[in-house]
Image (cartoon, rainbow, N blue to C red; front, side, top):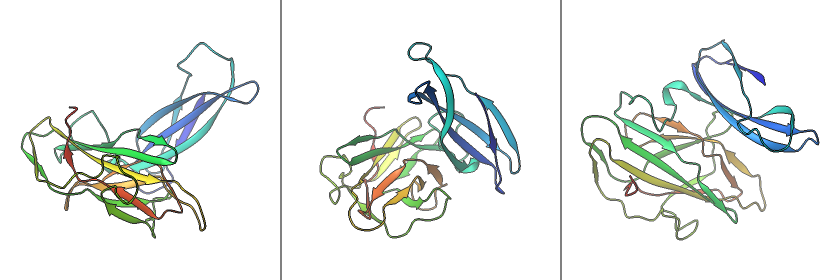
Length: 223
């Protein structure tokens, strides 16, 4: 399948495109996600995508399932060149069970000096058009959402040596009752006051709950 990415905006953007492969019945066979980096304003970029798996039902069609975009200067990355800030920030794939969502924010000191943190990341929730989302309370800690999510650590100063990592936990419920459901695909993250912003895509399906829990930065012991 060949598809095009068109940047109709005024800023260089990095796109994440999810393509769904379909069987003859019209049912989904597989999804493939590709990243198209640094598309200039007004540019058209063509990409080819193929299904990685060769066994299973015959693929007879494909369609674009989802497209997300972030300013290239704010793109999150777990690897690659170290940003000028000396830190990388990204979000993991998260976990969902019985309407409870948990996503980890990760920070790595990829620079040459000590990187200090103390407290909570600063978050700005954005809708699919990159406009700020209002009416959602960002709570420190996860107790207002659910227990046992890992978001309830007590804030403490961290001094990350080069190569060390920290993690913060986002948690929410997608319960829908009365009112309009809120979806915020993007979150602009600043690790601390004055830090370079990074835009992650945790796909916050907040339902009508109106709140998001964020945990304090803690040292990542799994590194």
